[in-house]
Length: 217
Image (tube, rainbow, N blue to C red):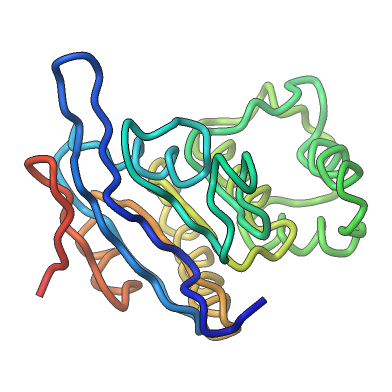
């Protein structure tokens, strides 16, 4: 991998549904080296949709997404070395948080039990707790979703309103860890409606509004 390649490139991304244009001609380049990048905008502007397109979950009507040198939808279906929390994942409700992550880790074989315990601790969940996920609150499920997204130590991390529904103690630990990830070289792209969160975390911020994405001065 060429270390000079951008971590993320969006080239002319447009998404429309029949006669409705969600956004059009979005260009974005994020260079490697570790950063936290925020996307703000009114509800319905397409923030979550844009993250889904980056992940390959939704195809753009026009344009290209390139992650770490791979064109999504051409070279890969889901970009490698990428973690994402966009919708709360469909965890197996009868299993504990630890067992759910264990099953996910077994797919790649690259994560051990210590890492599972570590990510659960980061988001404020106890890896020894055998409580089934079906009993979790929305906030606890969101925490588990963040744990899943960071499990394999991705180079690009996509987070859709990561601290929504999480209490103050939880979001403080998440903030601290995201800053640690940035300092270790991870590129993070997150959406948020919390301007304080954007101010605390983000090195650069973009506004998605009226179908266009523009940097916030």
